[in-house]
Amino acid sequence: MGTFEKTIKVVEDDLDDLNHVNNVRYVQWMQDIAKEHWQAKAPKDLINSTVWVVLTHHITYKSAAKLDDVILMKTYIDKTKGPVSVRIVEMYNKESNQLLVKSKTEWCLLNSETFKPMRISPEIESIFLTQT
Image 1 (cartoon, rainbow, N blue to C red):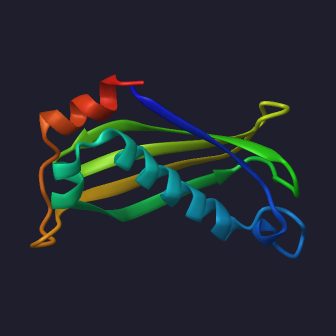
Image 2 (cartoon, rainbow, N blue to C red):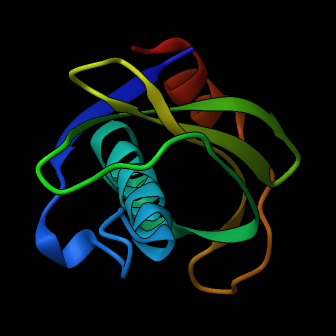
C-alpha cells in the first residue's frame, strides 16, 4: 500500500486548556494530510473532476502531544468499495515513536459538477494502494 508521511511541530495555537494538542486540531491535521496525499499523487484532471467528503471519523487517542513535540504523521488507504475509501491516519511522537492518535475515516468520492457519488476506479486504486 502507498503511505504518505509528513512531520509537524506542535505550536501554542494547537493547544487546549490542558496544554495538550486540542482534539479539533488532530481532526484538522487528518483532513490536511488526506488532502495533501490526494493532491501529491492524483493526476490534475482527476483532482479537477472529483471531490472527497467525509462520511465517518473514528479516532482513538492514545497519548497527548504537547508544545514543541514533533509529530510524524502517516496516512494510507486501507480499502475501497464503490465510492467509499477508508483512510488510516497515524500520528507518532517522532522522538519516542509513541503512537499518539490513530484514525479511520470513510471518505466518499463525488463528481465535482454533480456532487453525485462516483465509483472509485481501478486507476485511483492503483495510485493509492500500490505506490509508496
